[in-house]
Image (cartoon, rainbow over the protein chains, first blue to last red):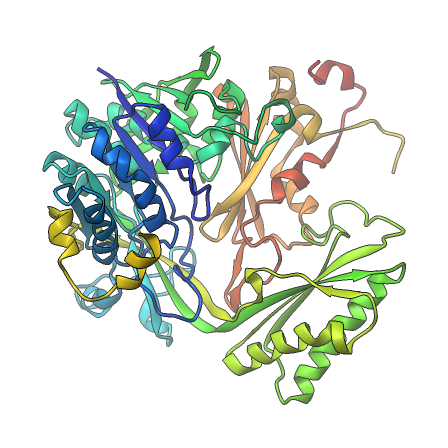
Length: 465
Length: 117
């Protein structure tokens, strides 16, 4: 018996229609949406304090309503809950209820957000020391603004075993989104290291999204990327997996693309650690069996570490970046002069910015020191970023950059984009928390019951139908 | 540039990069066994550190996955600093893989044997 698990999002901001397309063309047992990655960034950004869920998710739920209704076997597991899985479950449930799925069992996995528990954890003897420097948290005299542990598959499996068809978590180890479903379907014990390791590898690969089918790597010209498909893992009872993709899509799943993703976003491959199992990726064999059919087997597993990884962050101020197109045979000199001019004007307004960065995109500055800049450049993008403890200083910086086309040298044109906003400047504090101090909890209710809760998120429901 | 023959990483392998916490990682997958053996000998952590010295990179660790002919490089703490988030354009290190592909290594005349056709 094989479990078919697909992933239709490899990161926040991934293609919005991929989930709907996938479940319309393929019958899968589980669909995952993996949005969260890396150290904390303000999720749901901007200036309005919104619910702490990934902004992409409600619209995707809307597109999945028909599939939930028509495909009784379909279950969705996602980390879209970010800092508030409960609020995310409410928003999703409002949408589901409006479209005939008010009885759908929806689970929120909570207990990962430890922002309100930091004092308690310190009191219980957990130093929350910096994972790299060893500095204990109490020596950092800064308020922590976000804090969460990366949970594992166990609560996901519990939610599914209790009948959930939509499981919403906060930050979890990426592989957990697949380990949970596989463990439930195959009835694995939590010390079945070999099987869990195989599912962990499959989950790691699924989390790479369209890169499994050739996006984002050399060889992309040889496959049809415009319609690139998302990956599907078929996981057997012994943990071995076949990696493929949704049919009738572009891209290609090959031994090369799968190996490339195997070695992506990993540290020491002999110790690929998840909260449920540790994997030695150097033991994994990858074999192409046919077109878009790659067998992954041989993964050796070992017991999981005793602690959860945790990500804390403290704010050091605000940051923003701006981009301007600079044109002309003198574009390099002009760009540098324009940056200096804007920063001088900020200084004249009374702000000496704490940190600044000036880059000339088109000269190779995005990866400095690699190769020579081209000669005879006619155009370049001036990229300037600034950070300062004072919000008004960073806002002034953006104003001065925005005014350069009007009040600076000739041949400047603005570039629009999300970089032109003042955002919190966060420093990541990676640490570890013993598992026994964390209590992941599953809250399972019908969509109708979730939707009946709370006055908030009416806007979200209206916005996403 | 000396008269010595060189070959780039991109001619022998594909390379992908991205973030892992505050580190940047670059996975290098060789096209052939001969290419992997060559890269294992020549694409050292020290050479990678020099290639990316202007980023800057404090430390580079290299790991080997011989079963799949791959090397994994971890550029420690390349994406963050204690004074704030990276202000550079490529805050996720996504461009480093393409930059790694341009790294030239001395071949001592073995080029034709190394390139896959």
